[in-house]
Image (cartoon, rainbow, N blue to C red; front, side, top):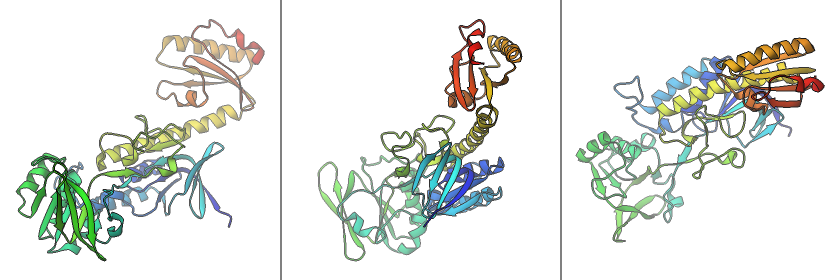
Length: 404
């Protein structure tokens, strides 16, 4: 079966907070934009029962409700949405091909916002009880454990805050913590609330050794990390909140990843490959929150729009010309301005088209064309570079005569 092909300016892969924000910015810039999400619009934020640190909601807000607002807003700008899985990403000429099962989406720029997936403990029998007593979402599954006993693995913000949420439903909420008594990875506000909550109980210096049960989970065997003692805990359910792993499989061997598999970007959300940007939890960074994902998405969407504009400038004003003289300069430098006057006079004398590119705000076109640092000059003929040179040490342009 031959695949369909559809063309877009921007394809955003991932529909979490970062992806939706990137799509919003791209769509608002009047770019033809597609957002692809394989499962749930809103991503991991939809699993958070209460978000208290996102600006603009002083009383806090349910994660699902916040993501519904995001969803409504980005769609307002004409962004297309496809609920499907991306199988591969590869270069096709000057474009990127985003392949799904039925369709290849051809994009000028791609924004990776694929987020992460819950980390497993790796303990014995764990896979046997996934969705059969082991859960990763308190908001989704709390009602199932009304009046029952559950165990939480982890002591970070998500673990403790979701544990507090579970106390509204469960009779007992036990927490396995790898640290010494009183030490948690959660913020101080959540930690203080948890220690005061009569339904929450802590088992310090422990990790998961194994899981037991029949069709459903019945017991979690913890191991004391100091003594080696096995501590059986009879439970009705177990929630894992021990971090996430990045969803970057389709980017392996394509763009730079850090040692943990997260996408490496610069401050403009640019990856190691031209035309691919990243936003949200999939990025290598210090803090993964809705607020930081939104910032990433805003930058990625804006920089993708700028990149497309610059590429179109290259195609229409440089590579499509029979012959063009390109001068790269920094408008804030007096020497570059002086040289611009010389270049203008030279282009008129030789009757050759001149394209002067100010690199003060953005150096992207120069970098894409692999030109030297400013001030520099290049001659292109029918889309091919025939000479490129720095002008930093040159007093005149006579060296170009045999190329013009």
